[in-house]
Image (cartoon, rainbow, N blue to C red):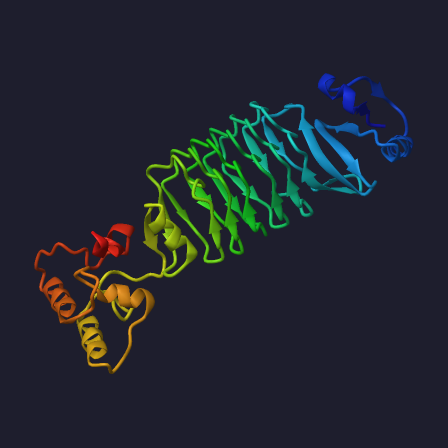
Length: 320
């Protein structure tokens, strides 16, 4: 029979009060009885500290650092891990890797769950099952280089990645709707992040202190408006270069024809393609833009970045 370590909430700071070697079924009966009167019990199993919910699921509440790599199992016994507890791994600087690849039922990462885990030196891939991250979950994970959100998250909460100073590779999930206050503030290595079209709110402080940041946004999206309003450099992800009016095969003579056709009111240009047609960036689409493209094709040196993907400076130069 494997040893089961059991201790109450008041003993948590002592880690383990004593070893009790009794049948596992008896331990479960005791735990259920204590939960019914409001006492929270903690259990240890091969280095994992956890709590039991409704006798059917469990929450990760600690790790004893027997290895520096924390691989979270799918379940212990018949109970699935459904969450990482609030402050469960907080300030555990010995963890260098967190692996969620085995979990299938994890729904929540609690407040400050990995806050201060400054030793994490590998990218974290969040599982498909995850639907909620709480405030400060990865705050001050200063060595973490990347985060991939293969999840169903709709919000990145306040302070979630605050001061993750090594964070340089971020992939946000489709379906994300909001990025809250100082969520990525002072991520000083973060130079580029793509914002899904589904995002409809970004707090003005979300990227505070990220001085070298460029946002990948879609034309007409909330994220594009946010980048303009907050003076953040951006690149349009619609796949269109300045002067590529028809969006096909790069900049060529067909784009001159497309402008002429628009001016003759035979066709219309909208959205990013209308912006692409403003080749000389004077805020007006007219025959001078067709001329600028022709000069570009003839390899004249021009002050306009024709042939380059849109950035904030290109798109808003008309306002200068």
